[in-house]
Length: 342
Image (cartoon, rainbow, N blue to C red; front, side):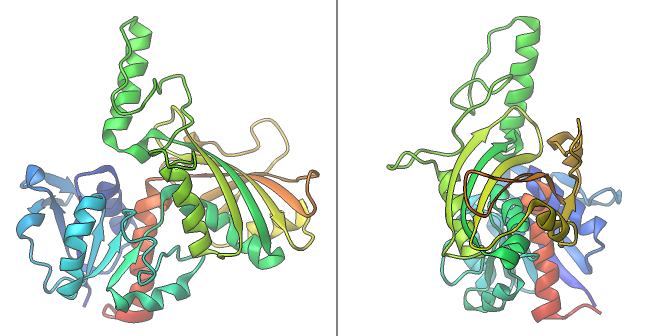
C-alpha cells in the first residue's frame, strides 16, 4: 500500500519538477493530486514523462484529510495559509517556501546533511525545504565539516533566473531577443536588465545592506549544518536559465589539503566531483541542468588563510535546490516514520 501525495503549486516550475521527480524515482504513491490556485483549476499537468495527465484541483476547497504528504511549491503566502490546514488534517507538509524555515519547531532538512533533524517534524507536522542556493552549498560543505570542522565560509553565488520563477525566465528570453533585433529592452521582474548582464541583487534589501537571499543563505546554512559556522554571502543574478553556481571559500579549524578534500568529496552522497586541472575540466550550469547531483570542481588550497580551501559548486536549482530535495525528504519521512509503503 502506497502513499497519497498532493502537489501544491503543480503548474509552476518547481511543482512540475516535483511531479517529474516522483515519477523518475518511482515514489511509492497510490494516488497523486495536482493542486493549484483557482486560476489554474482544471488545467492538466503531466506526471513526469509517464504520459499520465493530472487535472488540477482548486486549493481553496481541497480536502487534505486522508492524504499522507503534501509537497508545497506555491510560495510563502499559500504556505502560510494552507500548510497549517493540511498539517492539522493529518497530512504531513513538506514546504518549499521560506515561510517556515527558521521556525524552531520546524525541521529544515537536506537528507544528505541532517537526516536526523526530521525526527522533530511531528511538533508542527511541517518540514521545511531550504533555499535553492543553500541546498547545494550544505551538500558540499557537510563532508568537509565532518573531516576538518569549518570555521568560516565566504560564498558568492551566480544564480539563474529560474530561481525567480517562470516570469523571470520569460524576461531573460524576451530581453535577449529584443537585443538581437534592436528593440528597446524593458526590465519588469528584475531591477536592471538581466540579458547579457549580472545583477548584484537577489531578493530585497535589508537594513544592513544585505539582501533577503543572502540572509537566507547565511541563516539556513547555520541551522542545517552548525550554528557556530560564520557565513557571509553575496548573491548575484546571472543570465542563465537553469542552474546555480557558487564560488566558495572555506576556513577550517584543522588542516586539510586539496587532495584530501577531493578524496572526501568523491565518496560523499549527492556529490559528483569533476575536477580536472585543464581547460573545461569543471562543470557549468549547462551541464548540470536536468541532473540531480551537486557538482564540485576547482578544489584548491587558499593560501590567504590557515587551513583554507576554495571550490566551485554547481547544481540544478529546480531539482536539488527545490523539487528533488522535497521528494528526498518525503522518502526519508517514509523510511524513518510513516513506513506505510512496502
